[in-house]
Every structure is written in C-alpha cells, then in structure tokens.
Length: 508
Image (cartoon, rainbow, N blue to C red; front, side, top):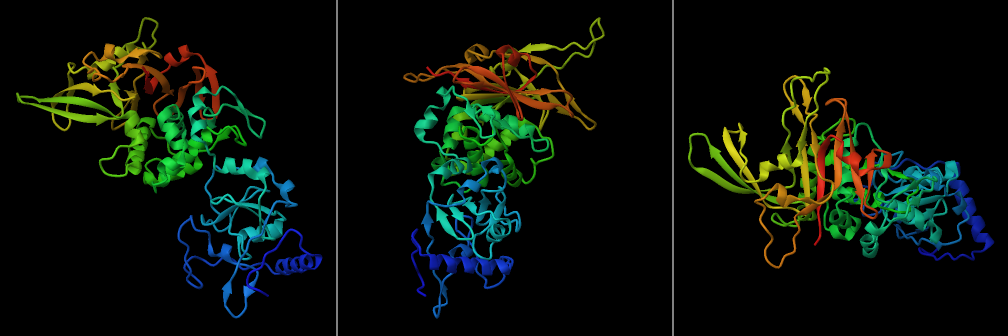
C-alpha cells in the first residue's frame, strides 16, 4: 500500500467494507493507555500550540520505511452531526482531559461535553468514541472538528456557532458599536441576557473577584483592548490571556447560556498570585483590584519603562510634601497612583435617644480635601510625620477606595459611615481647587461620571459584596451580585455603603 493516499467522498463499497472491518477489529481489543510523558521512546511535546505526536499518526504505515504518513480527509456530509448536543457544551472550565488530566491536545466531545486527550488509536477520545458511540469532537486549541473513529475532519458551517462560543471573536467595527447596542440576546437555554451585563458564577466565596471584573468591564478602553487578542498576542502571561477570554465571553452576544463562569480566570489568578487569592477564601476587592491591575500592567509592558493600557486608563500623579517633627526641612516628591484611598471619619460612640446607633454621613467633598495640597494628614509609620497630598494629574478613570475596615489583634472592624457622592457631573476642580489646568490646545475636562460602585453589606466577617454598574447605551443602572442581575434606580446607588468606585472623565 502506498504511504500516502487520497480518499474522496465517492469511495467504493469494497473500500468502505475494508474500513468497517478494521474499526471492528480495533474495538474487539481496547487500545493501550497513553504513554506517560518522558517514558517510551522519549518523544516530547513542546507546549499547547503543537499538536501531540499521536495526531500525526495514520492507520497506513509505509512498510520498510518505518515512518507514519498521514492525510486527513475533509468532509461536509457527516452523518453524526445531528447527535451534537449544544445544551451540554460548557467551555468555561479548565481544558483538561477527564481521564489523563493532561492539558495537551484536548478535544471536547460535542455529544456529551466531556474533554478527552488526542484522537489517535491510542487516545482517550478514540476509546470514548468506540465505547459510548459519540463520534463528533472539536480540538479546543485549533477549533477543528473531527469524526471518530473514522478520523476525518468535518467542515460544516453549522458548527460555526460552537466555535464562536469556544473562542468569541470581535471585529474592530463591532467593538466600536458595543456601547450603542440596546438589544437583548437569547441564550440556547431560553434565558435572555444583555451582552456585557451577564452574571458570573460564585465559585466558593469568589464574589470579590466577580464585583471587580464587573466594574472593569465598564472601562471602555480596557474592555476594547482585551476584546481584540491581537493587541496582546506578544504577551506570554496566562493571566492576560484568561482575562481577555473572560472579557470576550461576557460581551459575546451568541452564548449558549445566560451566565459565565470565571473558572479558568480564577485558576490563572491563583497561580499568578501564588495562592494569595484563591477559590474558597474570601478576600478584599480593593486588594484584588490593586494586585490585578499592577500584575496586568507588568505582564503587558514591552519594556521596564513602557506604559500599558492599565496606566493609560487609571494612572494619575500626586505631589507629596512630607514634614518631620522637629525638622524644618520638607521633602517634596511625586508619586503615581491607580487608586485614591479616602479616610472615613470615626463613627460616633454613643446612641441616640431611641437607643439606636447613629449612622453618620459625610460628603465626598470633605473626603477629597485630603488631596487639595493644604489639608494635613498625620502618619506614624515608618516615622511620625505630617503629610500633604495634591493631585497634579488626574487620570481618565478615577478610582476611590473608602477605608471602611480596620484590623487589630482581636477582630476586624467596619465603619458604617455613609458617603454622599454625585452620580453624574462631578466637577473635580470643585473638590480639588489646586488641580492644574490642561495645557493650551488640550481639551481635558475635569468632570467625572460614576460608572461602577462596589458596596459591602453586613458584618465585617460575614458580609458580602455587590456592585452597581451603568449600561452606557441607555444610561441605565444595574445591580449585580454573582448571577443576580437586575435594573435599579440611580437613587439606590447613592444609598449604599460605597466601598470602591470608578468615575469616568467626560469627553469634551
């Protein structure tokens, strides 16, 4: 037999019978298990981008040469396409073989949704096709679809919707129109959802991640950057690529279900943070936001001094004047920031005449005086000093953190003070009069609008986080807590115990 042959759709009955007998002979004796990495002939596989050696094998061996030759038939008329079950497909989880737990060359069975490694005669996917009678598989990396055990590639446009769910893709024209879209989408399970406003699964105390992600999805330049994978194709960080995948799934208009699971992203977070943030342990969204933005920036930059989309969106600059006790000299320095911490006044120690605790209120105007360059803030670490801060460059997206929690040796305390803040048209120059004006010829507005507000409800240890976000296309507000997504009034946003906020600079 020749080492290489071409099979066409119009094969003879004799050839079909020979092929059928060959498949039956294989099914009588189950294939041996996959050879562990580093065993056997010592062949090694280099990364996920390269298909495994078993995919280069063919049934036909060139006798005398000792080499395998392969030609994959491409067909459109697969009789098993009607067995594909889109209801069971879920590509939000880690791409590991359900048998070998390997992440190399993984295929998804489009009939039952399970993941298997390889498609050669020795592979788990091939075994599954014989034992379960499931014949249609998609390679999770290359997005090619195959029929097993016949081993031909299926080229049918009816499978494109599966490819789009596996790896959502956007053109630049589609990205530019996202904030104008007012249409709801219908998922395959019958649920309606708004692209960009989908709920996120809470995987064991991970709402601190969910509220952070939902907030960052409102930052238009950041979202647009991650919707186009070519923008960060040079980056080798798994965290960057998992964040990009999650962004595309949240904004995809053709999902099979009306929610998204951030499981793959969480796995990348645990690895990158060395389990500082992990599934099953509650953490603080402010700490997570700071870590995530700084890590994404360091992974995205092409050189040590290079900027990134993170700094272009969030980086501002402060002038810091430091005075030490008994020393007339002042230390004046500049420092960049991604988030401003606002100190809440201490709550009252006494109750009112009705024996109820008084919940104090404070205006955002008073809290921002800390950064007017005149107000003195005393610090005790690392050395007793008087500090004055002044914002000398405001970012396009301004983040505030209300310092509500304090820890001591015994327990964690929460400050319940309500902050009165504007939702729209916050003139930053009214709050920080010393804010420098833009150079001549630059149209930079100092007005900001709220786009995300993370709040904390309940006790310090047992409470939970939720977030209010704005949908730009209709300027409507939504309350989001894990899978719960509901429209709300702007007045409800102002009545909450704000913990972290993102304001967007108005465009001239």
